[in-house]
Image (cartoon, rainbow, N blue to C red):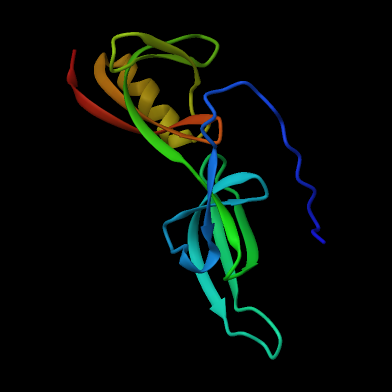
Length: 159
C-alpha cells in the first residue's frame, strides 16, 4: 500500500484542520505543500507525461518554511496532497527577555509571550539592534501546522 504510516493524534481543539487536501496537479510554484509532515513553500514544480499504464507525476521541490531545509516529493498529479493553512500576523515588539523569548502586543491589546527569537542570523541581529536603539518594531509571525516563527521585521519609527 503506502510507504508511510499515518499516525493520528486526537487532541481537543476547535476542530480546524492544520491542512487541507488539494489535487497535486493544481499546486503551483510559490504555493504551499506538506512534505514529510513539514509545511513547505514550493520553489519548483515539474510534471512528467503519463506512461503506458499510469498517471502523470508531479515532482515538487520545496523549502521548509520554518527551518529552510530543501525537501522533494513525487506525487501522481491526480492524487491529493496536503496543503498547510499558513497565516501571517503582525505584532508589535514590546520586550526581549534574556532567555531568548519575545513579548509581543496583539491586535486586541493582550500580550503574546510564547515565541522565541528567530535562529536566522541577519533577522536576529536586526531585531536585537533595532530594539536596543529604541525603535518601534513590528514583527511578522508566520504560523502553520501548530508552529510559529518570526519571519520578518518592520520599523515603524522611533518610540
